[in-house]
Amino acid sequence: MLYEIARPVLFSLDAETAHETALAGLNVAGRMLPAGKPLPARPVEMMGLNFPNRIGMAAGLDKNGEIIDGLARMGFGFIEIGTITPRAQPGNPKPRMFRLPEVKGIINRMGFNNHGIDALISNVEAMKFKGILGINIGKNADTPIERAADDYLICLDKAYPLASYITVNISSPNTKNLRQLQGESELDALLGQLKARQAQLADKHGRYVPITLKIAPDLDDAQITNIADALRRHRIDAVIATNTTLARDKVQGVPYGDQQGGLSGAPLFEASTAIVAALAKALQNELPIIAAGGVFDGRQARAKLDAGAKLVQIYSGLIYRGPALVREAVAETRDYNT
Image 1 (tube, one colour):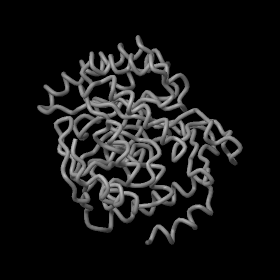
Image 2 (cartoon, rainbow, N blue to C red):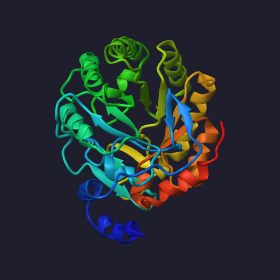
Image 3 (spheres, rainbow, N blue to C red):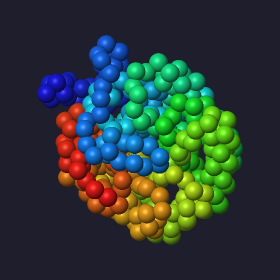
Image 4 (tube, rainbow, N blue to C red):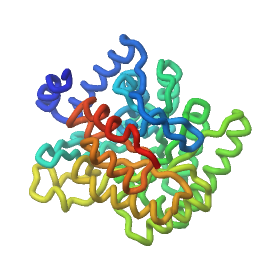
């Protein structure tokens, strides 16, 4: 109800100003109100973690871990923050975020703007939230792609003690050459280094923190097969499908539809769900899939599970529909049995 009142005000602002205003409100709510609880559902065991429901907050909204407690009050079963990089960086020049309300879409070219891993860790240490927290890691824009693994390892080292799981983001279209890391040899090298460090950190900290890989929707069958093979070969714990798309076939002629950046929201639903289904076929249940992309109602959340996912993340749908979407998605998937 409150969001129905607030949304016209937020949508009267430019997209990034609205984003910052919403974050400020959630920050205050998280600090002043009691800790939130996940909405009740049949729990899901995955990656050695017990998820209280299947619906999570996708990375990207809370890049620095500043509004974890505010998000927790919406009833999510898990929350993912980031993408975070070793050093603070401003991201790409503004304007860099655009709403496409005619098709319920968003285009962004933020470019991993964030305060750096040390600031995120301080925020996480101060949170009240006791649930499942994913930390999404990336590389700084000025780090050569040949040295990308160095950045991921720095973030992995620092995030490991506080994260429930860690997501490796190699699929943002807004960091130059980042998607090259989805290539067969590049991915093999990166995952090998990350898994070796994960084993060292598990020994050091006395607990195993799962690693997930977040991939793009803009993949052909051969690329999906190569990624699935790499996930199995390196024993990656889960895969998130998908990030935003560079495709524009669903937004032809729509205002701002020709802006550069990643397209999310309703226009992404079909393509991202197809990737989930293709991955599920390629992986044959050898590792779980977390679906993200275009979920705007409970029926679509369930469709992601039907396609082969175990969990579902939302982001753009939350911008358009508010917390009611979380309640609806949890209700629709509450008793889902896989």
